Length: 199
Image (cartoon, rainbow, N blue to C red; front, top):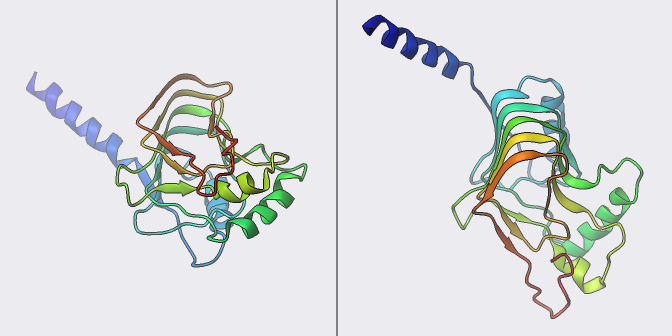
């Protein structure tokens, strides 16, 4: 009986040591998407991993991000930002979204099993600023980027995400099953009186 307990502890320790954490790199004023795509395409963190957007860093996801098929992976979004000039960013987004290569959402999960998208419970960090105000003021509803496509995920979790002025369609879960979605906060309040049509 004692031997079984020791063996179990040892096996758990070995299993835990196989878990990897990748801290997403950041360059001030630059798009952080290309470097992250390079790492994701290597396959080194597509299973038994945490992909960490660390607290205290304002990441720039200026171009759409597509995750590969993931298994036993947590994407932990402790911090995120996008360009402060919402109107300028809108023009940039329009060109991307209008192209035939746009995947449909700014963040796309391609599928997998046991995948968690986790935000921060710290109200100061982890907000995804969609800069939707520029879109609402212009009443621009053509080629607007959707937010998150959490697609083809089995046994998934979306928790503690905080979205600020999203442009449209916050979370889509097409093809996913057995999802647990809770404790998410979406603030889509216009500061100019224009209608936040994404709600």
